[in-house]
Length: 131
Image 1: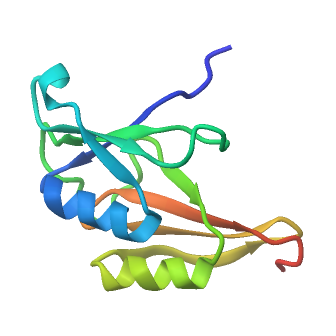
Image 2 (image 1 turned 90 degrees about the horizontal axis):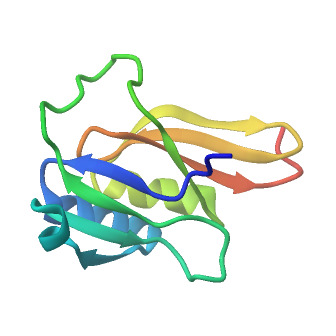
């Protein structure tokens, strides 16, 4: 079975992206550029004893995705404790709404956003009372 073990977010402005994801989700970054041969920062997304994976921000190798096109790739979704507070941070730091907050009835609140680099991502707050 092939389990997802790492993700990469392609960015144009590394410092802006590190600030965005660091401020919104509390991620920490490690410079792995020497290994990759390009600007590449490992993203530590949580403690080793927590469920989840780590990934990286890497320098985009082509044009930024055009707005309004269908998603071409994977959308990563981050679990959050407070949906509304997280959304406020996303918008404050230059993100925009791609698909507004909606209930996954009996499970959670879910929504999708566009980061400061033009990438789509989701946030998910578990809530059995969502409807």
